[in-house]
Length: 610
Ligand code: M6R
Image 1 (cartoon, rainbow, N blue to C red):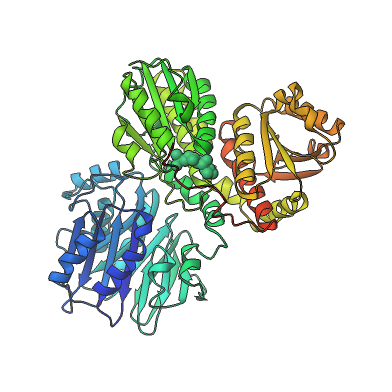
Image 2 (cartoon, rainbow, N blue to C red):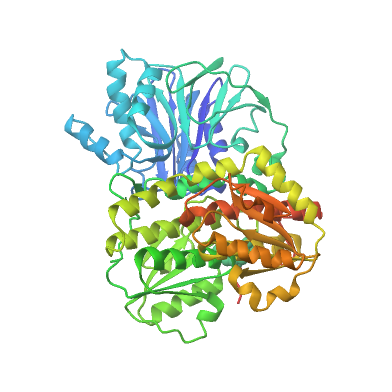
């Protein structure tokens, strides 16, 4: 994910930018660049593909002198990771420079219009439309940089953290929607960054910009407005985090931070890929959807459960036979694979050895291969025919959270892409699902409000001393039950099992007594009444029922000893929302028991041994 740093003040900007960008390296990137305003106003731009150290070496040999600058690490989405596509991007006269984090979804029509009006594009990026738009607006607004940026943003759709400066102004203008941005307030100097650690060496007085905020920075102060130009008040907060706490964004663990990052991670997974006007999904996949007759999904652990959701979605929406295997089994079971098979490997790290070897096995028999992967440039991405990146950002907590919900969302998009291409989904059906998918970041954000989180914490603490747990779900939410049980096991060490709810009566029901908490996912679905019958079976044996219900479902609440309400979601997308509730249940249980949730015993983040 891209990183942003900006500086205005008495120091040499180059030093602040390089030091700040180095603190953002953890976000992942493939090129870096800076723009620095010299004393006479002229702006120098230097950008290099590859590591930040490439850029730093060039700047060390020939430093750019100036006390106002903006810097960027780019994680390529549109266009190759080369010097030209690296940020900053400058206007033709070199006077306006911008850096951008996010995706401009409507960049293609904008680019077309701007080209017709005589603008010449030098890069393949979506971001470059911003500099051309600002250039036009700057002329229209009588050289008012803030107003030019504000009007330009009115024309774009998508996510952005944007930072702009102009050779004729000693000021920086920035704005954000979705992409995070924090401002550092110093004595006679101001800073900007996409994350706190970049600024900690310089100041601890910070302003967290909200969605839709714009800001103008001068050496001695700042002004925040909304996108309509109205001034808004944002408090300066004193940040007393140490370096480790800063990396956790103020949360008590990486896992908790990553749970709360899910609205952003989901936005990044979905953005630029859904076209509600046509019902199409643009995944930039070169594979021919008509060329395979069956799909094999292969993964381990949490990624496997995301694959199980994928199995439901692809079979229902695209009507292609799907089988799913844990990678360690697939390799040795002599699977039926040929050139008509699409093998999909799913992995957060892209390095899990079982999955990697299974991928090689599938390739040996001629399968086409697709990776649904988080870690850019990882081994699997180098060996598959095509990759669908989930763009969830770095996941540090050993227990996977945001990678799971992003993988499920990626699977939904894949199922829609296949369904449209193979004619099993009408435009109308696709548009409805696409709109439901678009809602996901907002629904997860609603679930993560303090009152709901506090309630889940109370439920977790009530049952934290249970010896065993059972998780039940049906249909597209039966994998949610498996993932919920895995999360609880991994970090709390409580024994937990999961079953498709209808299967319980075939054996596991023998386990149920008054000591057994049973978590039942019973959100809105065509099978809800059947799930409730299974709940009755648990209650008849004195099991304690924790019901996960859709907001507003008062009718079924009476069947639960405790109820966790989640925002109402369309059934096909509900596994994403429901999983977040179960992640919270697991983490609060583990914390009540005093466990280290980031480093659960015996587990490794990427399992690279067989
Ligand atoms: O990096 P991967 O997605 O390939 O990892 C697969 C599993 O090892 C991983 O999901 C594991 O189950 C996690 N501990 C889940 O929280």
